[in-house]
Structure formats: C-alpha cells, structure tokens
Image 1 (cartoon, rainbow, N blue to C red):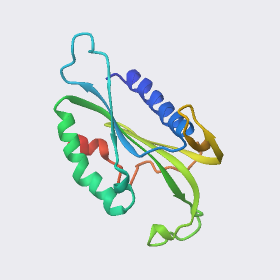
Image 2 (cartoon, rainbow, N blue to C red; image 1 turned 45 degrees about the vertical axis):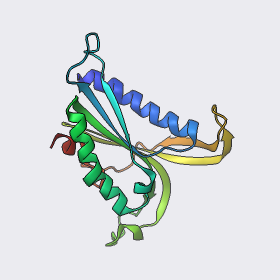
Image 3 (cartoon, rainbow, N blue to C red; image 1 turned 120 degrees about the vertical axis):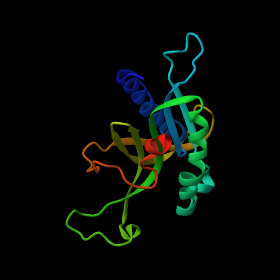
Length: 182
C-alpha cells in the first residue's frame, strides 16, 4: 500500500467514524485493520482491505474485559487475518470519558481520581512508522430521528486540534499494529 493510498483510506475512515456517531448517536468500539490482500484476484491488486473487528459490548464494561479482548481475542483474530492479508495500519475508535488535570497539579496514583471533564471520540491510527491520535469532543443536544427511523442523540463533534497528545500513545489499546505483526 502506498503512502498516498493509506492517506486516502485514513481520511475516509475518519470521515466514516464521525459520520457514524453523528448519524447514529453513538459509536460502538472497534478495531480496524487497513491491509492488502496477499493473493488478490485479478483486477483487485490495487484494492485495499478494510477489516472492522467489533469489540463486544460486555468486554468494554470492565478493565478485565478490555484486557481479555486485547490479550486473548485479538491475537487469535490477527493470526487468522495474517493468513490472507498484509497489514499496513491498525486503527481503534471508541467513545470515552476524558479526564483532565492541570499541568501544575500532581498526578494521582490512580488515574480514576482525575475528574472527568469531557465526553470524546478517540481515534488512534498506527503504522510501522507513525502513531497518531485524533480526539473530538462530543456535544449532545437532545434527540433526533435518524434516516433509519431510530431515536438517537443529536451530536456535534468538535475537533480538539491543540490537545496535548503524547508523542507515543500509551494504554491498553496502543501498540496494536506491533501486536498484529508479532
């Protein structure tokens, strides 16, 4: 996959994620792999593969469930995918609560002691050369009926471009590209 093709897919993925939450009123957590087929059919040589791996809701409700998904389920999924695909990037997207602390405040031993300040969408993208995190603040403003007739939250997303993001992404869902290739 060329860097230009990746950039096109990256932009389409971000647009897809933001459209999903504004259209559906929620974003269900998932991991996405951008890849190339190992043995593409004739005419499909330039078509990238985009593979969405949903994270079961019951696993997102606890730290133990998230750990099970990352450490036990994903490695098996990645092993199976590697049989047919060559990964170029791994992305992870989810709604989250953002905890905010002033730069001058002491960081508590337990991160859960930091107050929650915002509801956000976090999108991480990892390749062999780069880690990137994109954060949108979620502003909920009542309810609406979407194009499918479902009653959903009306959502506005506000890109957080000046957020201090670490140069290396940390956390349970970081390093997924490396795990894919191990």
